[in-house]
Length: 432
Ligand code: URA
Image 1 (cartoon, rainbow, N blue to C red):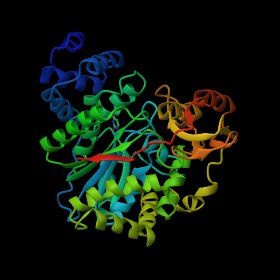
Image 2 (tube, rainbow, N blue to C red):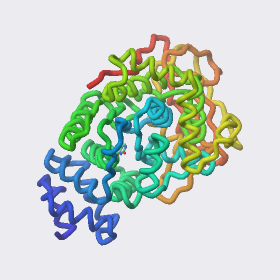
Image 3 (cartoon, protein in one colour):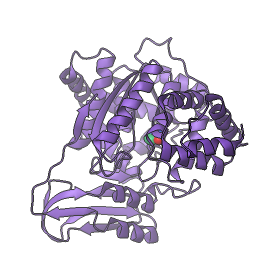
Image 4 (cartoon, rainbow, N blue to C red):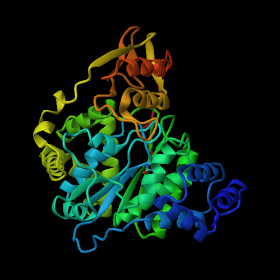
């Protein structure tokens, strides 16, 4: 296999032979194929897509680039949740412990920030001491004993995705349906799960801007799930505004903790419970959606979900004592208000640019080596449908680097549309 020849095939719209694709990816993982060659192939896939046969090969090759977990000896239902990427999406940090508290086993492999979207791993790493790089044996032990572990791709699990994901982030090749599908499903299948629920985000802050493309992705994810014997539910949710009260790093963990303690915002809890209900029903816990939602509310009310979160933090070398003083941790050095420039109703939020502003503040990377700022983020005081007066504060924007804060503020200009007409926003779009 000559790398440039394979790249040219995809560039010219021809299909990729399985063995050649396998060699190319293996050589990329071991360093023989370079970043610039992989970036060229990813861009060719971005433009020309993939057939189902190519996609299934891609998933299998990425999956087999590392080890595959086996939890078949556990009595618990082994399952996971994943999102296609959004702004302010801290659902995994709430739902993982919540489902473990319900008796499911959750071996969760998460990603870092990607493009304008936030990454669960980057958020978790702001918990003092919390380790996301654990060995496979340790990961297994944690899932068996605590009921949940949240880790990153290691060199043992899906190393191909680890490298390709980081490269896509900085080469403009994120928004490709087969690449997103391959990345998500290879990681999830490698976890050894029986069930999966996917939150496919749709809207101006999602990789899929419209429902049609989101459905193509959702259907593709389900086809892969079927092919690899993982029961896969898909829920389509709106990303036409950030989810919850905050977007950034520690501020999102703080919000997730508040939600686990019973003070979560309504939109965040609605998405969390809808996804959770899918997995609980798959696991045979709750006869219907309402019962499955009530079970989750009860696990929060009783404190069991938060207790499981603290157990997970301690088991992954985090500091539960620091978590307990969550509201005062990682205080930003700088904070600025963004105000309404007219009175009226908020009808739109440009979530893509809001996401870019969080990257600029220090919550995401512009190049793979960038260091993140745990204090960085945005707090949303007002969202779509709210009536506001001229001069009223819409967001607080914060971090610990004044220069970056100023450039984030420039990105945020005009991200909120205020009109005299009423707003129209639906959170849960439909379910598959
Ligand atoms: N989440 C992933 O794990 N991979 C993607 O490509 C997008 C979202």
